[in-house]
Image 1 (spheres, rainbow, N blue to C red):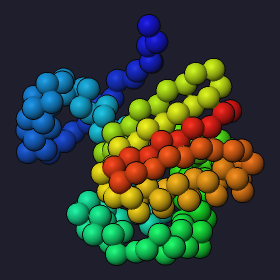
Image 2 (cartoon, helix red, strand yellow):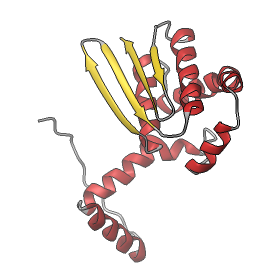
Image 3 (cartoon, one colour):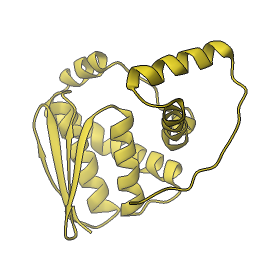
Length: 174
């Protein structure tokens, strides 16, 4: 069993905040400590970088409606002209480097922070990610194009991506 080292830290928090945290911990059926770890991990992995890299929260229905307005050609152009470089820069800034391992770690975190269902399996040196988003074919096409560009231009590695309107599947070897 893989156990992580932990440390003890004490905080003074507003009593109303503590009350809300206890209520949420009970709702999730976890201890206050487990919830606090989740909150701090989310902040350290993602939240502290959001404003620095220009991320803004957008409701899914808005994102879905926006992406439906574009043709396949426009989605591919968006991914080529803006998406690849922005994704590369954000991943590098947040992880401190831009190798395959750090990029995929960032990608996994991004999918989790977006509340997408994700399955990652490894067979030998072949990785397969299945991401369920339900944001339409154009959302899948955008990610397919960005990931193909990053794998080709930056990592010089082949990648296989299958898409549909609800999910996309990524397969590559390390």
